[in-house]
Image (cartoon, rainbow, N blue to C red):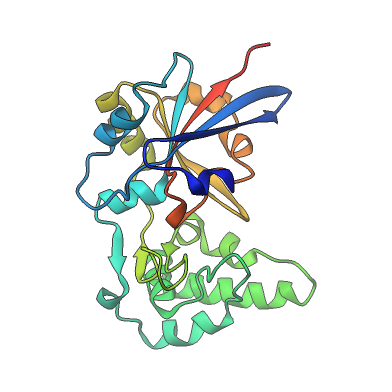
Length: 236
């Protein structure tokens, strides 16, 4: 992942990983900063058409897709209410980022999951932390809340003032992008503390555990600008 930070736009970096007794090559592609209104399928073709091989799968970050579809909302457009201004303080920040611990993100969480569910999630989290258990806030709040991103990467980063909303139908989006670019597509939400796969363009892609293949977060975040990768099974 460190090697990928020094890439120029259009350059690639690759590494191998073992997953479920099979070996996979991950080819990261350095892109320009992809913004609202850009066509993701065209971006994919631009960067991978010369390196794609049959059997490859294109991995795209959920953040990139959200950014192109107007789901990266400036925090100034979000007006935290009374509950959001108080509940966000109960979310512990980690060395990896602020998580849901901002008034704007908490307001979005309340709107997505409902106030009572967020209150329950906060209470359960407080109780379980007494016993050393972590992660219960998101388990109770649900996947939509877990998928809220942004306000990260430091004050100089492109997403520091943006709240990134979850994709409404990631499987449908993945299918549409795949149809437009001609390659199988997986939408991933991976970070330094875990993550998940949000969308598959074809149900057959479930045969590969892409979350495990990407478990070390090779694509990185924000200024790394490698939101695009190929996963290629390695044959002995």
